[in-house]
Image 1 (cartoon, helix red, strand yellow):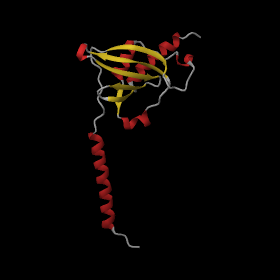
Image 2 (cartoon, one colour):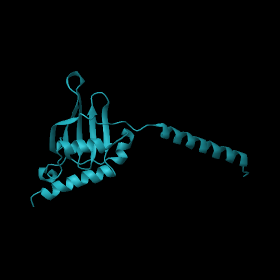
Image 3 (cartoon, rainbow, N blue to C red):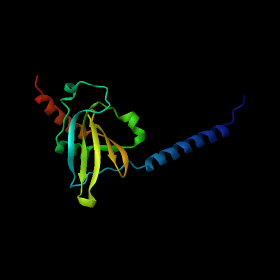
Image 4 (cartoon, rainbow, N blue to C red):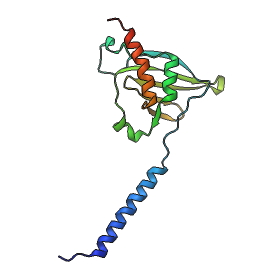
Length: 157
């Protein structure tokens, strides 16, 4: 069997060109944008077990609660991720805090419903932009874990 060095080089260059093109495409893809308006507030905030969750032990979720201010802190600190990454980056627990993020008034009023899981992942539903996902990592996770620890210490033993 004879080797063709020119053919091997061509395949190698073609493979590298494909990888370079793929890397350039991925680098150009911008992450989804998410910002919380300065005048935003939280309405209809509840904590508990998410509807449809398999867990039925309400006491199990008692430690996971957030005030409106803490939910805003989460929503301002968490990072949006593309839907393609949800399967690999998001774990979900049935213990949730859910509510509505509201900004503006009158005809300018905007509402985004959210569900924040005890795993510090979130789903947002915006009537304009549809379903979005957030993750809380790094400084966000440190901040939120400190808040959750505060609630755990307050739980009756």
